[in-house]
Structure formats: C-alpha cells, structure tokens
Image (cartoon, rainbow, N blue to C red; front, top):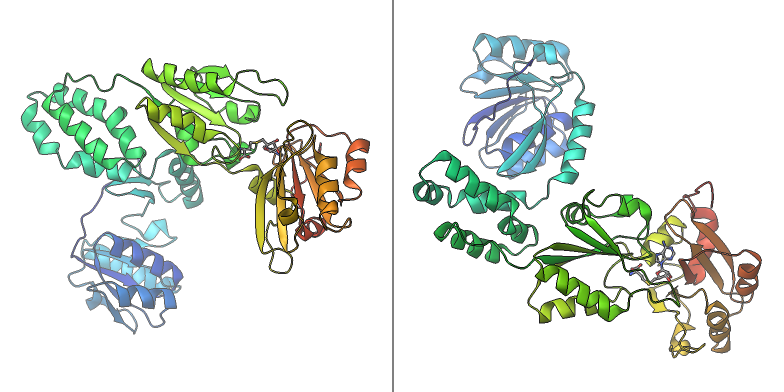
Length: 465
Ligand code: SAH
C-alpha cells in the first residue's frame, strides 16, 4: 500500500487552497462540503471559485501571490496553480511544517492524495489508485455508484441514532453484530430503500425491544418496469430489486438481456401473453403474486416498458393492497420514449408538435372506439401501442377524420434492441409498406410531422436492423 487511507475531520478548521482556477475550485468545494473554512490565495480567480468563496461561511479570498506565512494555522493545504514552481514551493514549505499537502496532478509533491469518492453521507466510499491513474479510480467509482443505493445514507443515519441503545441492549460484540446484520439486510433496510422511513423506524424499534421478533411473515412484491429492451435502460433501483428477488414473474416483452440480470438462483416464472394466446390470464397472475408473497417470498414482477403504461400494473397491485401485502413500483422507460429516442424521432418539437398522446391500437372485434376526431388533429404526435394488427384501420380512420393522407408515420420494430428496424411512410402508404417488409413484434407506431426528423436525427443503427 503506497498510502494509508484515513478520513480527516476538518470541520471548522482552516484549510489553505493556493490557486483560483476550475480545478482549485473543485477541491475547494470538497473542503467546504466537509465543513472546512478555506483561505484561497490566487492572483486570478475563476467564477466558480468566486461563487464558492462567496457562498461558504468562513471562507476568505486573498487575491495575490502565495507567501510562506499563508501556511500559518492551516490544517491541510492544496496547491492547484498552473505555476509548477509555486506548487513546488508550497509543497516543500508545508512539508517542512508537517502540514499535509496535496498538489494536483503531481503525486511526487503530495503528502496526501484525494480519492475519488461516492458520497452517501454519512457513508463515504473512497477509491484511490495511489496517484497512478485517477481516471481508472473514477471508472471504478462509477461502477460503485450504480450498485450503492442513494438511500444508504439515510439507512446509516437511522441506525446511527440507535447505536447506543443497541450497545446497552446486547452484551457481547457477537450479539450486536448479529442484530445489525439482521437489520441491514432485512426489512428495515428495505423499508428505507422504498422510501418508507417511518415504517423502517417502527420496525427497528420493535426489533430492538424484541430481537426474536419474526422480521416479517409475508414477503413483498416489486412491480418493476424493465424498459423497452436495451438492458442499459434499466434504472438502478430496478437492477437492485431484480438481484434481490427470490422469484421473478416476467412476460414476453422482457428482453432476454434484461432477464439475464436477474439473480442467478432466483426462480423464473414465464407468464407471457402473446396477442391472441393469453398464456396466463391476468386474474391468475394477480393471484400468483399474492400467493408467492404470502409464502414469505420476495417477488419481482418484471414488466416491459413502464408498469403503469398499458401494463395493467394498477390491477396487479390493487389485489396486493387488498391483501395488505407490501409492494414497491419502479418506473421504466416506456416504449414510446425508448423507441422514439432510438429512432431519432423527438416526440415533441417546437415547430411541429406541441403535445403527445399515448394510445392503444388494440382492436376489439376488428374495430376500436377511439376518439378519431381528436387523434386526427394537427400539431400533435400520436403514439399507438399494440397497433400492428390494426394498422390499416388506424391509417384509414385518421384519414377519414380529416388527417392528411400525406401525414408521416413511423413503425418501429423491437425498438432499442439489436433487432430495431424503422419503417417510414405516410398514412396512405404504410399498410402496403408493412406488407412488403414483414415485421416482428413488438412494434410501435408514431404518427406526426416529427417523423420527418428521423432522416436527419437517426443515430442508432444496429447491424441487423
Ligand atoms: N408497459 C409497456 C407497454 C405494454 S403494451 C410500455 O410501457 O412500454 C405492449 C406494446 O408496447 C406492444 O404492442 C408495442 O406496441 C409496445 N412495445 C413495447 N416494447 C416495445 C419495443 N421494444 N419496440 C416497439 N414496441 C414496443
């Protein structure tokens, strides 16, 4: 190990920053975050530095060159000027006085270095490459950022507040450790992650009063939006819950790449529905969720796109609420958003479209009872979900209600995936285009002037598309 990792308390302490540029400002803001009172010595001061000094209490700006007496009383020193000689001088003089000194981008002159940090205060994770490769340290930090929920900070505060009580309650270190492990990996932590801090507090206190308390007899359900296909479009929360669940119920719209990210040993249950082949009826899925949760299992109900947009997510949690089963809902990127973005078709645009509508194109008995008059109006974008079978009906109905036969329309097959394909036409031509170019579901239909932007803005070009 080249450096000893330590965390220094600089609250209310004098810290010296030599230099006034952007980099110096970043360091200064870090010191301020940790409660330091900084003196900035710099001939020139960037606007970023000026605003930090103006906003933070106890900070002072000395607009002049560095002098040795600046070191007096400083707890730590950071040199970030673009004059190597000045940086060297600060380093040598600080070292002579045994004041920890950091010189940016010059590990040789440093007696301490600043790590890349993940701040979930009071939890702070520091990553250092010992000055060998700050970029690598930052990449590692980015990986950790995604796997440490933002709510860990709140969790740490919650348990920190009862630390003394726990010490008094349990005699041995082992007992305490066991208690904490139960709290931090069990329902108390999960309540915090779900934003139910009050429930977490109650559960923590109940467990403190009775450590043999059965944590929770029933499981819970995570209704998770899996996005349109590309696994990169999952949210951090979706991924975390997918890796935590004991059992996963998924349907046809969930891409294999997304399913791959589920915990290895979780049970997977397919409840997919093809259009005319209702593999598992909705009622049965709802009942499944209830039964599994009542067995005490953590159930992840993975749904394509967003669970609350044509996803019947509302019906599923309705049943859970009836049975008093805990649930969380995680939004996902809905097909309209994912497909339009990956096809280079902005859903709204100042020149073409001031509103957007998400509509189901699903036909009942070969027809639909949509408000065609409204959908045929101008200056809007209309997105049809489940519209492939009804495409000729959609095009002819829009035209019959006054929309121009020349109105542009896009059909996007398997948007955001390696199989994405985009067909462009007009209301008059699209049915024929689809006949000549067979597509594979799922497909999304976008109607509106914005479709013309595809030609210029398309950026996602998978090989097979
Ligand atoms: N809850 C989902 C929609 C479910 S309805 C969401 O928010 O996206 C199913 C319809 O979604 C499909 O018929 C299709 O129109 C659309 N869809 C879902 N994923 C798609 C994708 N990757 N590409 C194109 N259309 C998609």
